[in-house]
Image 1: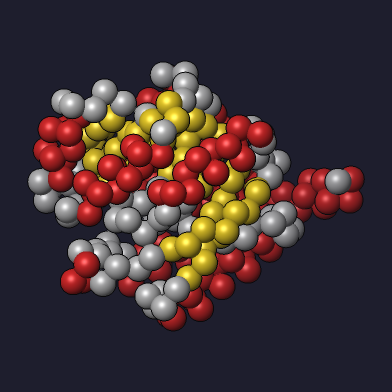
Image 2: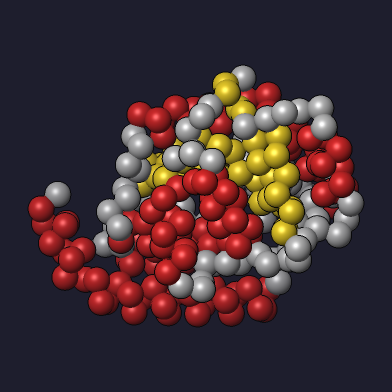
Length: 251
C-alpha cells in the first residue's frame, strides 16, 4: 500500500449498496488516502462509510446534502483535494466495476507524466452488455472528432487519473459536466487545454443483480443529456478548430 501526498483516490458514490465496502477495502489495500463522495445516498451506505472512518485515518467521507450527479460529486472532491494540497486524483466507481489492482500502475504513470491525464481503456469480458459495448463506439468517435484525434482511447470509462487544477478550473467555468456527461466532457475539454491522454488497458466487470450490481443510468433522460452534450462539444470543436489544427501541424 502506498500513502501519497500528491495523488488522492476519489470514489463518487450514490446508493451503491453493500458493494461500496469491498470497493473501499480493495482501494485502501492499494493506495491511500481514499476519499468517498456520498452523493445524497439514501441506502445507508453513507453511515457505513462514516463508521469505517473511525478506524481508518486515511479514509475520508464527503457527504453531499442531496443527489447532484457524478460530475458534481467529483467536482466537490476535486475542490477539497486541491485545498488539501493534492495535485492529481484517480476516479473510480463505487460498484467494483473498476480494477483496484491497477491503481498503483495508474498513479505511477501519472507521477511520471504529471501534465497528462491517464485514461483507462476498458477490456470487456462476457459480462459486458453488447448494447453498451457497441453504443459507446459512437461517443468514442465523436470525442476523438472533437479533439482532432488527440487519442482518447475510451471516452466513457471512469477509471482515470486527472490533474486536479485544470479540470476543476474547467468545471467552474460553466454549469455542465455535473451528471453522466462528466466523463466524456472532461476528457474532451482537457484535450482542448492540451492535457494529453495516455491510454492504459484496464478490465471492466459488469455485475448482475444477483451479485449486487446496480445502475442509475436512465435510458431516456441520460441519453438526451449526452446528446445535448455532444451538440455543445461539436460547436466548441468548430470554434477551436483553427487552434487544434495549428497544434496538430506543429506537434
